[in-house]
Length: 125
Length: 388
Ligand SMILES: [Cu+2]
Image (cartoon, rainbow over all chains, first blue to last red; front, side):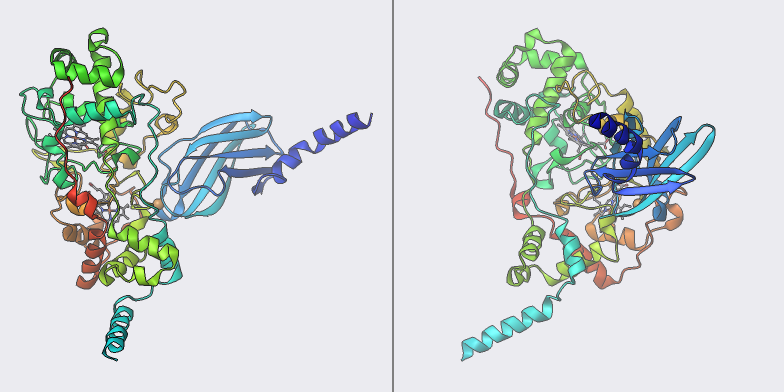
């Protein structure tokens, strides 16, 4: 009985946990929270890496991930491969940030016909 | 007493010439090392690192039998005394090539090969000149026939690949030639340079050792990672981000043709049978193929070329993909006087004419010169021992 209760509790709080406890960077807008981390962390300069992220408060029909360098007006030379690894959890592979400076990770979500862009800025050196 | 005076004078002159670098600059300079980098075998090439394949590849590299007129070998264009370039504006084999010959020191570290990155493996890049009409000009069948016919080549092949060339199809034989050539080229380390000694002295906090580095080169190094922003592209231990940019070098070639650079490289990559995603990758898991799958074409790729490494760059004049820049001084001037209107409209918003003073140009050239070491200057190719 105790064990079953614990399981129910974990289920209830699971998504919320996924969006803050073990992910370093969280972005929230319009009731949706997206938390992401780089693999390895911090994102390396000019070397391939992956990101893992979790989305809470909505289940998108479509997601695209890109990284851009606003000051230089360019993005990456690679389009990362995206996989859903568990419900609401994703992994994108094949990112390369090929210059030092400020980068912006951009997540475009389609949530039942509504487009939502979430982005987060970080430094690479 | 006299001796003390001499010592004091020596220390004073040291302090006068070697301006102390600020901690931010030192931190940036440290990122251009350590050097050399560890050698790792290429999983896409089963003979990478195998001594028999290195020996066979070395023999092939200097062998003119692998050309249509029997006179052109890899070494015709990739000469040891020019950092394995040729000192010419454009490569010259059976005819004139459309691009400048690239040097081959530390080529194993590349992610993309050629000025346009049309190859993603060293072995694939090594097959290309054998088949190009302007370079060595053979067909696949001709290359395979030469290998089977010449006893010393067949012998080298058997040792490197542990099978007889008679049992292997033409294209697979050609690919194996590329893999042996790659195994050899992986051993072309460019060695250490005066800059590496300086960088390691800074890392160790050894000011006496750091002061042996010429003061002009030290000022040039600070400019390189500082105001001149060269290290935004020429970054890390190999002085390249291994990607592609347009720095405003004209891309017109002889007879009003244009060289589309990376744009064409990506097309060639997609059709390339001799790459990580093709049938000849020896790694069933294709562990190194991720970026070849995920690479994406962009508008700005037109007129972009690969950022070259700057190690041993003093040996490989003239410069740029079309050999249009004669000297390191002219290369620095190019950045100083950059024609911003020449840069692609949707290209990098990063490059600006630097308007360097003559003294700053001298310093940057002194720094670039210090990236070439004694080992690279002295390198020679031992004559191959024919296999019997
Ligand atoms: Cu940039």
